[in-house]
Length: 479
Image 1: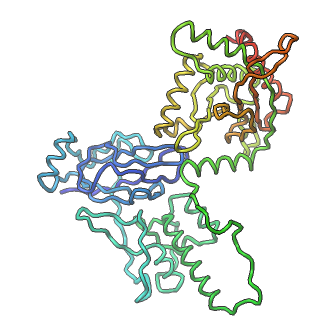
Image 2: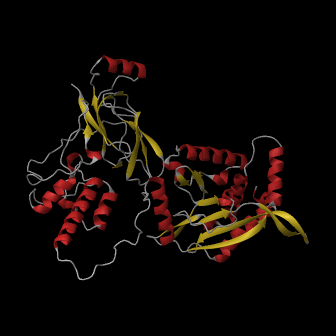
Image 3: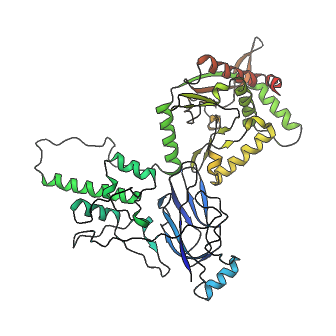
């Protein structure tokens, strides 16, 4: 007899609490093997293919493409130990080369957080309320996409939504407020309810076992707003109309701040809110650095990128000024200095600005840095960067000169302590060896956290970087 197991959106790491379904890789009725990717999701960090830890026949999918699901919400159900229902599915299984489904007790070799090689968790019994949840004759609210599964026959279940149940609690027609812990997994859902003064104990979630989803909270807030609006319309009109609540102009295009764009907005806002940053800058003659790069590339072997040379200069400077390779632990009121340099670099992609991280950049030579920059840049453009590729940086290098600008005041990549910005390298009049000459000039700017060091340290770091740009032989002292 087949056992139906429910596969939930696993914890993808790095504190991520939700993901958006980009593309389903399987259909209801498909045969899947253990650890076969079943859905492609987009988090605030990257695009990820999620493998299923069970093998069998897909009996239901939860959520359409474009739906955001919290960690712990159901993705699909799999009938383990069931044979395909008809001939065409048997042929499809043969063509795919999927291995026969293993027993439920075998589990998966998957390394996703929450899913290991042990026995899969027993399926919990879903408890449905028996009391009426809405007044008779009340129109049914639209069901949340994330909580309405598609059955194998193509029909859709239509359970009551969290908003309807929440309204029933407010109107006194449902069950009494529950006791015990609130069935919420996502911290985002808790924060949304807290910021809007909503008591989660008044809601009955539309997720499995009464799990409260983000859609339930949003629906309850909309219902409360509609009820408040109706009360205002029935009240006597004030003598003088009040001004608009929102300062945003009417009309225009509204673009949701979500995914990568939303993550960037949150991180930059937090950086400006928490870090007392300061910026210093200097112009440097990069003529000799450009000549050195040309000589390296003319000698044969892999080509060396300018970004790799700048990264090599940064790692040497951080060895002299380790205060800037650090982070502030606000709770412990301590500055944490790192003994390694995980160098982030800003990269513009079709999905927005991303900051891939080169691990142990201090231990790589110019060729190794060039190769790693190329690999991460290509992965960023293809949207295949993993969360590990985008986190853990200790210092960031931002080459905004590729956009044709000379200078900028970078915003620190929280929770790091500094960022070096590099403008475009252009011919300019420059006094060289006592005479006016045309030289290749670049502007360097350093934004730093004033909590980790004072201006003398920041100025010393920037001056050393400029000296290495103007006289690359200075680096020979550290090689």
